[in-house]
Image 1 (cartoon, rainbow, N blue to C red):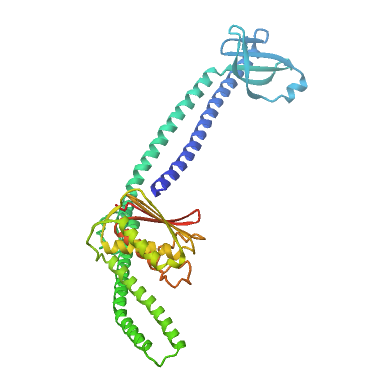
Image 2: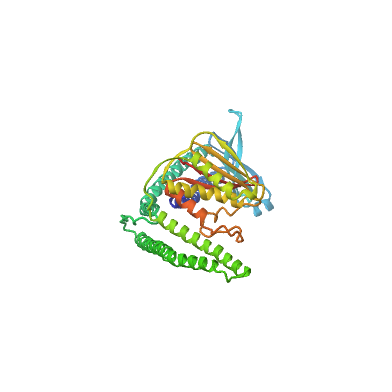
Amino acid sequence: MKLVHYTHRGISAVAFVLMLAWGALFYFTIINEVMDETDDALANTRAQLVKMTLQHPEQITHNACALHSYTIRPLTYLEGMNYEDRFYDSLRYIEIENEYEPVRVMSSSFKAPDGNFYEMKIMQSTLERDDMVEAILICLAILFVVVWLCVALGTRLVLNRVFRPLNRLLHWLDNVLPGKPVPELENDTQIHEFNRLNEAALSMTKRSEKAYVEQKEFIENAAHELQTPLAVIRGKLELLADSEELNEEQLQYIDQLFGQLNRVVHLNKSLLLLSRINNGQFTESAPIELNRMLHNSVQMMQDIYDEKSVSVVWDEAGICIINMDESLARVLFDNLIKNAFVYTPQGGTIQLTIRPDEVRISNSGEEPLDEDRIFTRFYHKNSKNKESNGLGLSIVKSVAELYGISLTYSYQMGMHVFVLNNVN
């Protein structure tokens, strides 16, 4: 989720809760005021009626009209002394309309001049009050929706403007690639934190670029410098091996030294190749038919690993043509084919599927590889394998990225599967 969306959602949620709480408080405050006004009106009516009743007790005992009504009944002395005034909501039956309507009732008592106590119930219709409450509720709901939408929209516009420098910085970081010059960062802003973030990102990128260049130069220089002493060592070993004074055990030691030396030479050539690829020294491209190249590579590997009795299954559904440097194409697919033969168990199977825009190389295997590390340098699933220096798949990945080819690995039904997409 984007930061602006996360922040906007949080602010909108807080605003919604606060406005809902404010709306509820406002609504119940208004209702309370309306109820107080109704109760005050009933209290005033009660005072007037008690006064009239005390002045003319024989004339007023009961009254009923559309909006108001009251009743008076006698109380015992004990009831009158313990009587408490109260307000409550009730219903009153209207005979003319043959229905009940809501009323607010005040129940009170008073003492007549003759010393007797009377109960007076005054009822006032609340239809007008309920209509007013309903109107207030509707208006409040409309106001709530409009205000919340305005707050949410306004907050979104403000956040988009505030986070614009961050979006420009992220876009700039996407364009920063190893081995390429660091692009200019044009991200002026008045926000202090974003200015500091711009400076930190620019400084970090320049340091990373410097370290990347130094690493490439070191690998390339080291590989070049190692070529001469490795050649000298090979020559001395060959001269030593030709000596007639060596016994069989010494010759075995020399053979082991040759094996290790070959690994070092191969490693040196691989590092030098990676350096050349990263430096962009392969610029020539030509159409290459991968079907023929893969057949030649498989034939060569079958001759080398004939003792493993590996069976190769072909599935060709068209001709696959790719535009790239021919030497890099051989490096790419020879490494993949060699990797399949090396890691296929005795009597295993290799499947090659060729489509006009896809190449799939699968080989049988006992357990999956680490998908997150398989293309990293010097990764070994089996450290005892003397034929691997841990750079083959890393070189394959570098070549694929150089030409925009998607390279993925998966383990499916006991098979290691390497898939190259967009190869044309």
